[in-house]
Image (cartoon, rainbow, N blue to C red; front, side, top):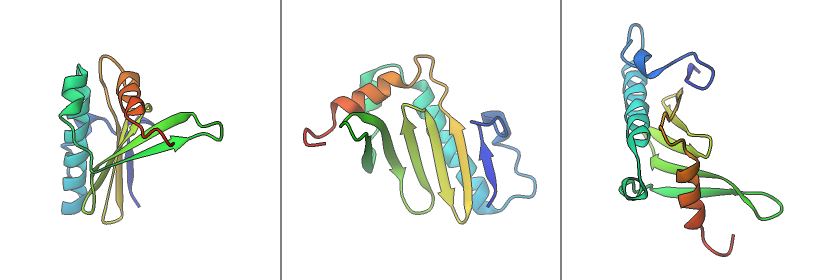
Length: 124
């Protein structure tokens, strides 16, 4: 499996357009992940964030009952794209390929995490 990750510095948004030697599915995956990164990087308010309609929201809960993470399913199938908060990472999977890029929001991603944490079901 090929892995491109903004987290470890091996791929940045400027690298997304470099398609030499890659399959069509990998090219589409890279473009799709970059598109989600650009959207989340541009959000500046709760109103912006509310325009996003994830297909699924998974909460990571500690043994003490604290919400420690949120994963938003943006697309499922081909490709599957997920946003991890508060880490601020967008991951995409398709046809054995994986792409991971950082959200570069001027406000950070903690406020996004706080928003989804407040929306968590009461019985978590």
